[in-house]
Length: 128
Image (tube, rainbow, N blue to C red):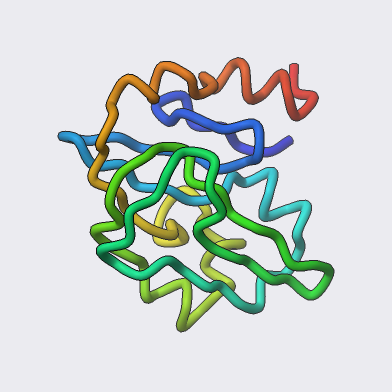
């Protein structure tokens, strides 16, 4: 069964969000990386880009497929994880740790209320 940390928020499209002091760190879930299998390429947004919730902001490619990554929240991209660009396997080995994708300075913190809890996400992916 995929790991679903309680302290994070989730999207139906399998992104996770960790919010701290108005900045959200975004990655893909353990379930998503397991479905993709071996990640071989990650394309991240450019810092300074304004993004809207639901907009495609990144791409991840595995040996099996390519998938769009959607922004869970609106705001400005303020950081990207060069580590996953240089070593895409980090997405598979540590999706909630060093395998994160990018950070956004939030423009509308109320959007967080629309994200899934760990319980809701676990139910979505067929957990207990």
